[in-house]
Length: 306
Image (cartoon, rainbow, N blue to C red; front, side, top):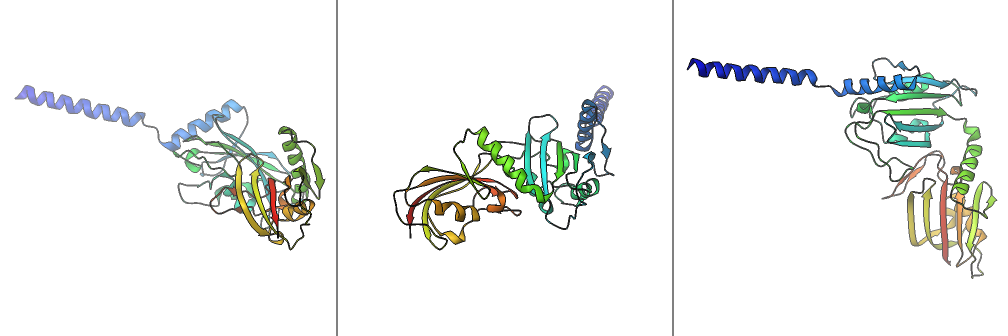
């Protein structure tokens, strides 16, 4: 009986010891995030400051050379996002500052509770236009254990699970958005070997198939079209067949370009955001969101003019 009791005691002792050892080896998400971020900072050879007890680290990249920023107004922000392991990168996105969560899948700070910590950090660090700040965001404040696959403006991408992020915010001068978008569109045309485009009020267009009709399209015309709309990432945000609409009810780019063609014609045009959905972007029902300040690529075939 004593031998049996000793064996039980030994088993209990070993169990407790094993449990204690496991408990010591267990690393919390906070500890894992901190370890990964510290290793990343060390490997980068750069200095980052800790933002209070938020878990965020930041580094002012550029102090800014423009006017002081009034964040109560619509302020365009250029955003670059990458995971610390380099498996995910999304660059050259634009976001309307007061919708800062939209560009990166509604980053939820402190679990599911959204706070103003990240926007406040950016507002504090970047005081002038054309200034930028780089922020290291621990995974628990980003997407956590859930990978993310629906970043507006990008297709076939995935933020890995438990990925801490390196995000750069550059606050742009809204007066220079037209210049920025024009350069972006030119790069897009070149990268996709799109040649022979003419330019009308900032919109690049090309009639790829001549029409056979004689009726002109006016602002009050009702048109029936087949169309596809894409973000410059190549992701289709909307399309339609035999879509009927009055021209005056469509975005400005359509109002400018469709009067150049007639029935049977196909025209492709790449438009800056101010001729499309501007600073607010849009979400077409049942399809991909259009981020703020998005240049768009349309291909439209006119099948009927009423």
